[in-house]
Length: 309
Length: 295
Image (cartoon, rainbow over the protein chains, first blue to last red):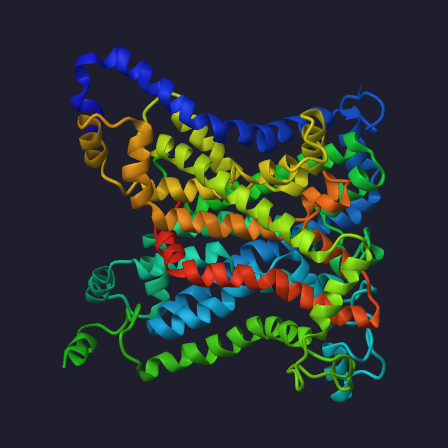
């Protein structure tokens, strides 16, 4: 604002030159952003209306892919879509609520233990795909050397080891557990610092005005005072839930997962795109995925977005 | 004295307390077991990496190593040399790719954040809104079109295929831009009065004042690049150009007995740099996070 006011006398030329400079500085980011985010999304949309096997040129097929997806693809309708919603709802919003509660509890203790505990809780989110695979495959190993099987055998809960990662029975639960375990990422860090930055006088004033307990405090002071961080955390939680799609395939070592028990929409895309080379169909599934992510995002903005934008 | 007075005035709001009080015990009762649950798998794998074969397959299984050995790490290096491509090659590849990506990411992000925060032009709100939408971008959704872009631009089997897809990171730009917003316009105005151009302003004003956000961007980029397998899987066919994460990942599909120790060793090699970088930059990251809100 102030910048503009002082330069008012030669606005026209100045503005144009400013815009030119701005454009030049923005160019590298814009170019790479377009190449690897914008254009791929556009291509996915275009290809979704075609048949494309990578070798021959794509042929236009109209809405065929979408019609097939929603009427013929029983795996998609019966397994993939319900799995994806169940998984995304628990890991996304569920993980989000958990990370807020943990962040809130951490803000109630002293700085040094808080730093140490936060680090322990944050660590799983940064260990990466390879590490997660190795750890949890060992823990849920299907023979008696697997830690979980060993404990259950010791306690006489079971007689023979359970094939956790090769059968459908517990597969989804295990995927969700692991995803929640690694979900306390930067959204979680943002919420800790959001809570810590709330002006303490707000709480004092509210108690003078008759606020009674911690629950009211969270509802009427904490959350409204850190809405921007809540929204950032929500977006990160959604992204994390959908970006963890590889977990089932990593655990079982095969796509599709056992009896499609852990088949998520991202695995379905890989299945058609990189295994069957039906790129047009894979693209249509991608578009559906992007729409689902977008819908989740709209809900998050409804809750925490500011009205004036 | 002071403490008692505050307490009598209002009951709640013990955010960031300076002293320990009995009322905190209930939080520790939840947080401590939780932290243990979170960190135990990590500690377990680190211990696995140093276990001799006998302990790896001892029954019942143990978490902590009794007689630590470096054999798993030695085996890992020896195994890779038998396949023709030594481990050092993968490490070098990964280090160079990571370094280059971080450098490019920093430059590109600083320039864009400066424009979004301090410049005024008509398309800005729309462009920033697009970046906001891209915060929720799910790369695996467009793996196929990304592959097509790589092929069409002639980047298949080049180093650029590793680096360029990860340079433009919407979250990084967002965080640095939010932080740049804190710099008063008057400061930039003064620099303009002194005859500074955009590049000089960025170098002398923006970079020194946004250090914490830039450090955060480095941490996030590092986490993404160092563990990335997408490029090696899809865009690279030459084994000698693939990354450490890819090689170690390919080991984890191998389930033989001897592989268990090597897999753990591999996991530790991948994890430790992440941990060190985060701990070093931890306070910077937390500082950035306080400006991370989306309005």
